[in-house]
Length: 277
Ligand SMILES: Nc1ncnc2c1ncn2[C@@H]1O[C@H](COP(=O)(O)OP(=O)(O)OP(=O)(O)O)[C@@H](O)[C@H]1O
Image (cartoon, rainbow, N blue to C red; front, top):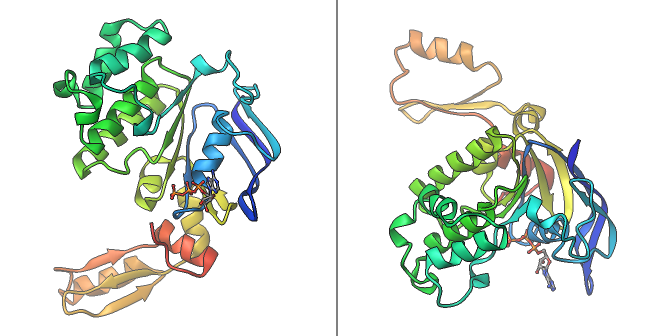
């Protein structure tokens, strides 16, 4: 069963084809990433799939149903991370998540557990406008997850998190996915996509340039490994084991750094330009 099926998806703003003939499928239980620089069209794809925007062309099915126009039977089965600006004003973090929980008949205690899971339980009595950007972001993720949806959509969920909170969120999302939830996120962090996603769609200019697992995308490049020694010599090789053995024989292993290809190299190869997140 497919969690998401998208065909020929297009959204036009004036002259700009923000999303241009996008097709993709996400399997149930998959961790799927939409990756690309600012303005690539990631958020627009996500909003079209969530049913928040109407496509100009193409079809979207989520759990077998069309999300547009507001499909009430689908809403309890999907979780959508809200932008911070969409909070109810003047509510505390706890009141905020309890409100969401009540909409889905979730018990308040279960909602409180989500504040704990995203690491802001100590801010439960703080009004949302007094939370930091990263704390608001964590609250918005907790609100998206509070009803235990089958499919979770997250738009750049780690954008304003510090490194520790970012890692904690990675663990939380991996855990959700391990328990069978489908997770779809957008990110402009290549390392995040590489660490988390089963497959990624690399987008630029409204189009999907490549769609595969991070490992397959990187292997497809056949890019050399770069080994830099402590004295600054850089060796490019497709046989790193042999080069490392030679450096070991020459007692030059101390202080070396080894760099294999990454998704950034894939982006460079696809577009001919450096990736700028
Ligand atoms: N409501 C709108 N009206 C006009 N243009 C829009 C609108 N929404 C998005 N766009 C344009 O569509 C393009 C894609 O925007 P989108 O927000 O989907 O990109 P993104 O990949 O999510 O970027 P970012 O990483 O900056 O969030 C951009 O050029 C943006 O300016």
